[in-house]
Image (cartoon, rainbow, N blue to C red):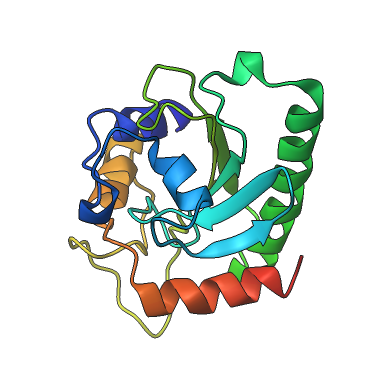
Length: 179
């Protein structure tokens, strides 16, 4: 499943507001030049909701210092990133009532912004609902029968949409309440 998530970031479209003006997109977010929905912040890191999430709750953990490679993180920044990943992951699982997560950090390969960042991505929930008859569609994530990995990946891909700002703020509040 992780390789699928990595592949989803290759040639990923960039949100209009994040078009490159020559400066790092995440540095612009950190400097409050670009909008973001912050769920966690310290003097060393910031955690924001992804504006083109793979699934609701998709969160990015970003060091406030511009560093392009995770292999170059100073120990104190790496420690702050690890603490943030752990805290945000716990709060996100509680807020979403979904303990299954993917946590991914890319270095060059599939790295859409050349600034270290971890993705915390809630796993899909493919379960049957008694009140909702099973069906497959572009916006469905619940199915009654077991699916192949390919079918699950297709459902995940078809279910993606741009972050709704109001929903993002509400989710961010639920996550922050658990930090």
